[in-house]
Image (cartoon, rainbow, N blue to C red; front, side, top):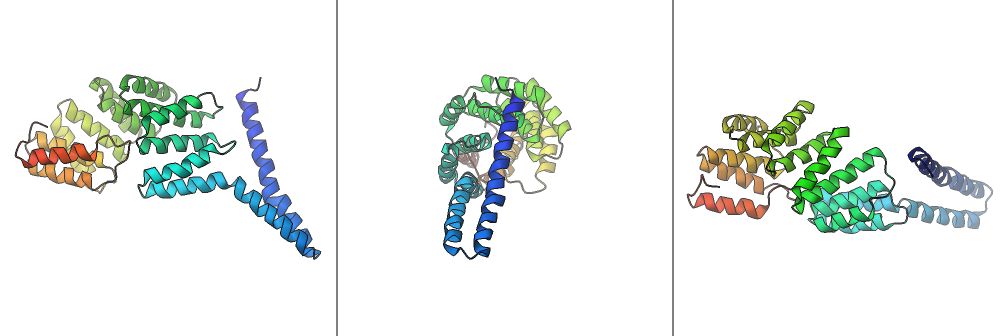
Length: 288
């Protein structure tokens, strides 16, 4: 039975051999044929080389396409190249994780869990397994299995820390019934990286949820000094302003939230925010 180290060694050796063929052997053969004037052979070998090169790099090319659409916020379009990269023979676990994450951003939560189940037994490095597990935990949250999501995030954070994990886990906990755990986790996350906007938003919103609106307001005043690219911070700050009777400010912040990019992992939807703006505009603030 192969150990994890043996499997990783085989993968590295295979990549090394491929790179030698692509970047050394084929170009040298082409150069030799060119130097001795065998132009027909040169053309044949060059064509084969280019075809092999493109095929070997096709997975990466499709991931570049995925990134292009992702950056533009066109998540449905990003799914096609991500899926094609994933379906390539011997596609990497990194590609798998990117595909699952794009499914989540496109709102395809059940499909993300289906792909997760199909690939659970693949060999993964520690970093790949953490990304894989984090994606699964986010999918579980989005399909309403919040306790399962929290349990999985708990397992991850017992062995690993990162800003992205803390932001995701902290957000999930603010939607749970255990606000003490949310406060504990988000305080720990803030100690880990106090400069993270996502972590600071989670902590400020947790203070609001436990009734410490003054502290939440101070944190949001500081957080929103600079423009942010995610809507949750503006929406959460609006909820704080509304609770303090500042209804016009709450509407202004919610409108700012609507100007940001939303995706399937955004904790609040455009429809929810629009509905609350309408509610406030009817003079019914304070009961959101």
